[in-house]
Amino acid sequence: MIKIKTLEEIELMRESALVVSRTLGMLAKEVKPGVTTLQLDKMAEEYIRSQDAIPGFLGLYDFPNTLCMSPNEQVVHGFPNKTPLVEGDIISIDCGAIKNGFYGDHAYTFAVGEIAPEIQQLLDVTKESLYKGIREFKAGNRVGDVGFAIQNYCESFGYGVVRELVGHGLGRVMHEDPEMPNYGKRGRGKKFKNGMVVAIEPMINMGTQKIKHHNDGWTITTEDNKMSAHFEHDVAIVDGKPQLLSTFDYVYEALGIKSNEEDEFRVK
Ligand code: MG
Ligand code: MG
Image 1 (cartoon, protein in one colour):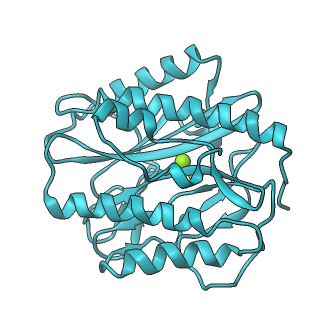
Image 2 (image 1 turned 30 degrees about the vertical axis):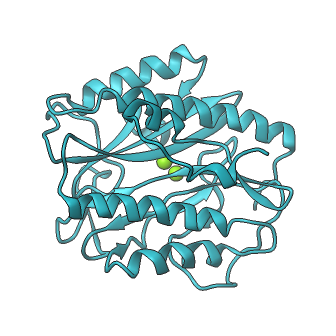
């Protein structure tokens, strides 16, 4: 059942999302060759707690850490560990926080130092596909419209769109209805209306769409071991239109990136 949020609840959810946005911004300055994902995880946990919030993933479905850290060929749900990041890696950092009883959940894939141009393109296309999906998340459209927009764009670059893992409704529970696949057919699936809040999160592979599940019960990698990227935003429908609750502004500020990609989805 889809839980519709009031405008007051959406404002509380914006606070939760922004805790995660600021956490990702803090981490953006720390992602560099030599740092371990476990060190980043500790920094994130401390930062989230300093914001009167609780790490959203820690203990959820028995996940042992604050961040899902998925380097290179890992798709999502990787564990932080003691292996230092090296120049040329990419690292998907997925972070959750609970504030006011609501979850924020978003993710950014960072470059570690200089990365190859074809890997940068994977990151750029995956992030652009997220905004193409968000544009379709509006009253009257359907779940398939978002998935179609993401899939169509990413496959035009020859990339694989992961099927088994999907975005989701978000609220007092981390995974609410509806499921938000990153593939689909226009005009299919549940209809969107005002007050819906979802996490849209394309997981896009440089090669095959197929993935492997590892024996630790969490880690997921691409079947061909090619790179995989992941970007995620929390979005509400207000006045019929998509409104971003999370933002990459803090990441961009930390990295010195100028971008107007979020402008059309900001509160007017
Ligand atoms: Mg997430
Ligand atoms: Mg999510």
